[in-house]
Image (cartoon, rainbow, N blue to C red; front, side):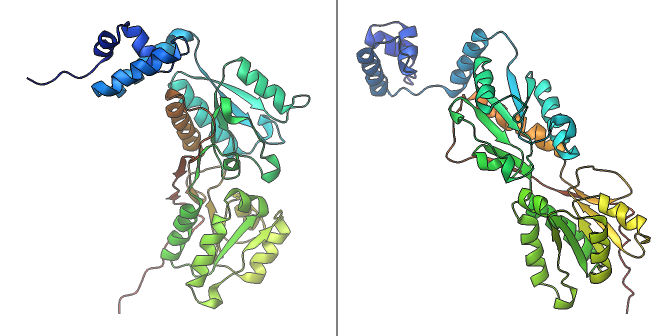
Length: 347
């Protein structure tokens, strides 16, 4: 006859206590005297007791539900110097994806601007603690100056860009290196040989320098005559772009800024006949006109909520030694701004 599995009941009978006392002792509840806890744990070990993970999760959920009858709240943190209404479209799309996913899962969301006039970070932390808000989603920040510090013991956070990842939180952001690979690979397959790349210093920092890393690898594997120096500036103005195009003569421009496409049009370039253009993970994703590598910013926000939900369900608060990094892959989307692939004439 198969031996029955040890349970709280068998441990309680051996220890001469109630099953509730056994359950509390195995969870190190302070209401059980230390000597009693140790005795119960010793008996459990002698019996070969191991907790049922499914039952443990169910009981944790029931206890949390009994404690709070209100919908749980996730804080969405804006670490920019600008208020939410002035953020770029990519940050707003990340927020929209997070809010939609949170509502679908039964969470409420609350926005916090960390640079709100008259509001100190310490005060925001006090508000979060007082309201019992433990889950944080950090919107993409503009640069290193916007990275802030939070006491992590009471929180579990997910950062949605490479810069905010320096907080030590779990991370969800674009797969920058792979997105660059998708863009350049699709352009080379269409016969483009002189690919010009534009990037601001801020965009370089936000990509953790991975765009330029891939470009360096690509240029090492093409003829030197086709290696165009990237246009890398603190800010790229209209005249700087046009002067660079005229001087370097790329046959296609790849840039994170879709505005560059319109500047080329306004300067009289016949796109895609004179020059082609493709956008790399642009903040505004469009169909048909501009060829682009999309990363899906709303998907980034939604995935951040999924990661956060899992951590909160396991009550995994505080800093983590090995943050989870989830990378959202880019996908090529056709557009009329890139000419069709040249047909190869059969010999």
